[in-house]
Image 1 (cartoon, one colour):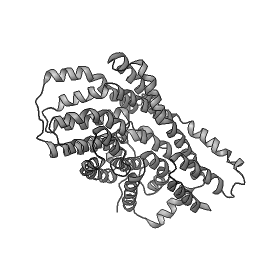
Image 2: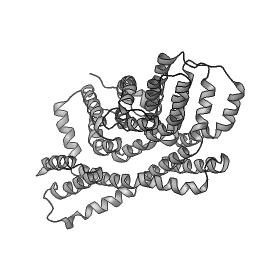
Image 3: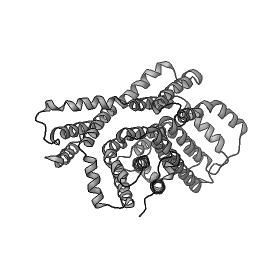
Image 4: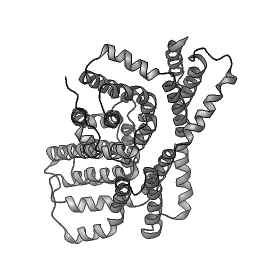
Length: 433
């Protein structure tokens, strides 16, 4: 049956609309049972899968995922988002499209705290959308800006998809976090330029020094959170996992004891919500690690690299092809599924063409970030439709010009590796035709 059997099994499960966990489990068992040479004679010989599950679950970096999700949920239920927005509004009041720029800035800062795009969109978008429309910004512009700004949560570190990519490919999470700074600033800048060009004359105000002083006094602890988390990681003072634990501790300290916007009785409910999100994700991730280990042991990625090298000789051609592939995948597959399935296969190919795996991880994540804004599976489209109470078609129309801007950003990030690797200190390889 061989590799054709994987394709048949995959198509059958998709047609039967089976969830990702069934798909990953079935393919993992199939690979272990049918692909070894010689094939296994009975399912009793599949004990290695159980061992691989323990191997996958024994990774310290896995702890960062639930901790960052809990921290994001704590902040969504608290007042950190509102305080960040107040600072941004006070500081950008006299700037053209100042309120819109405040929305982008707030999305970027909150993304650097929560590490999640949907959480960023819910927390910032739910507060900023009424303010933008009340100030006279067009409804369509406001929806598109905030829905797109929410996607910054997966490219501005800390980022949960970056952690998953690091686990699947075996690169440093800290390097990925650092590499995300440049692309994150680039995409934020594109959104700010778009805001000025589209709505530069709307709602300009003046400096209100009393409001600035109050906003900073009430929001400085919220603004310090990403400084503490990211500063600790980049200085080497603590690891990404430790930073996630500090994020939870900081969120509880600030929201419960200082701001007093969150009560202790609400915390168990927030933990339960986080557990619902995590339960299925962890099992899928562990199955994916087991499958990845099998593929490496059986040299499947190496064989694919060899075949690809026969067809494509240029790094430029490879990058064009892989970007098109990932953009299409992002339209139909959620980001976690895409990284779990494709990263172990594509990253070795990228390395073979001289592309730094950290740089390739950023390329992959930016591609899939755009997928958050493209139908039929774009997560942020559905979240935006729900919180803005607008038809899905209008939301899709509102993000269309920003998708074009993000594509420009993707081209720059793909062909100028220094945007990602400049702060990392890794080898920046520029593809030459």
